[in-house]
Amino acid sequence: LREATAPFPQAEMFALRDAGFTSVFEQLVSCILSIRTRDEVSGPAARRLFDVARRPEEIAVLSVEAITERIEPVAFAFGKAAQIREIARRTAEEFGGELPADFGVLTSLKGVGPKCANLTLGVARGVAAVAVDVDVHRVTNRWGYVAAPTPETTMVALEAKLPKEYWVEINERLVPFGKHICTGRLPKCSTCPLLSMCQQVDVTEHR
Ligand code: SF4
Image (cartoon, helix red, strand yellow):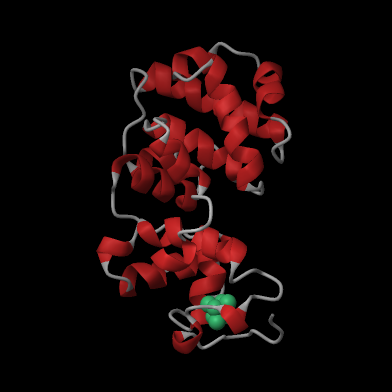
């Protein structure tokens, strides 16, 4: 997997981390922006927002409209802007400006589900947590490594089966792998380096 995904751009949250956006707050905002939005759109949107305001107390005083302007054209830009502003306000007021690396706290924030909480904890703090998005869900089920109907149940299955040392890396690898090789439609099975170990579950057509 490492070799197969080496030629492709990093998943955006990992790229942002490597560019210095390492706080729990910054990573959580990046994850919210990426929901239903391609990395090529959400990454630049995060950078445009952080260009004018990076700290929670700076974002909390922006208007929802001003945040929306910075993050468009991500999906649901206005709703996400309102969410981000509210998270910034709570972070500034309740946590002294530093969002704690705590799953319970993160999922208590409006609009933050287990995937974003785990991805944030994993990327920002190296906390072992499996973040299952559509790519991780699709690919691990096609492999036959897990058999789970939803991303949430795939997360539970992976946490039971996958060695902990790979819990963060699996997302980092499978996002580009799912985007460029094991694509939703017509996966590139004929040239896939993992073909010999893949059960191709529910793959009816491929390239
Ligand atoms: S062989 Fe096909 S289904 Fe299996 S991982 Fe590769 S691209 Fe995906």
